[in-house]
Length: 280
Image 1 (spheres, rainbow, N blue to C red):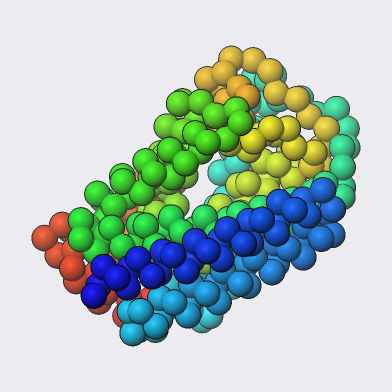
Image 2: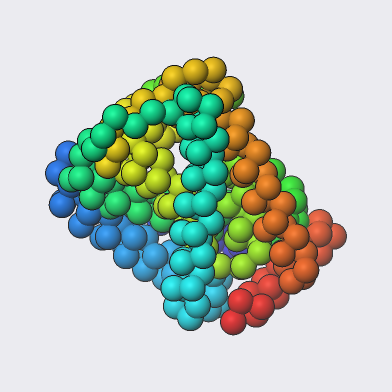
């Protein structure tokens, strides 16, 4: 019965994920429709996740509770923005990132919606479902590694994907975002981190995101230099600086999770549902 409920969660969430993804991709060339589609996607995904998880697990979905959502999202935006600023500033000071003026204000507006939708759907799928469900049986650390590898591997499907880029994302994003969830036991913070990183990367600094091709955000810019520094065609996510700062933030989140008693050892993995009370 538990297996059927888990399958139902995955099927329902992925179905809405597919529909919303189609809507966003269909209007991505129109900045205002893209903004609206992003807002619709966030609202639809949060509603469906709350509904299906609450129904199948017969509990309050504390990882998406409204109380504290604004504060958690705010700090997620701060962490995500600072992390990318640390990465791009190091690349800039080495002379490998250059700004040639303003590119597209409307492009930046459209990317708000696109990246909000992407951040929400990916966090609900990879941290809300994959990490959370694996953690129940295998504990926090194993779930962090496995979900991180799957998240990084998914990016191999992108046009300019590289093994180095996928490996980097497994560490700096997959593990880091799961650690952020473990530290707070809510999904608002990792959604905020994810959105801020992606939007800074594309909407502000106009660099490639995960090998998905050129973006036209606020700044007209160019990256050149050693691939280990710039990330090459994959974008700054494959930069050694992204791995370093992402690992640092992962460690910080895990220290917080440990101090709050949020780490689930393998031997106690089935008791993870009791952690829901900590988020109240």
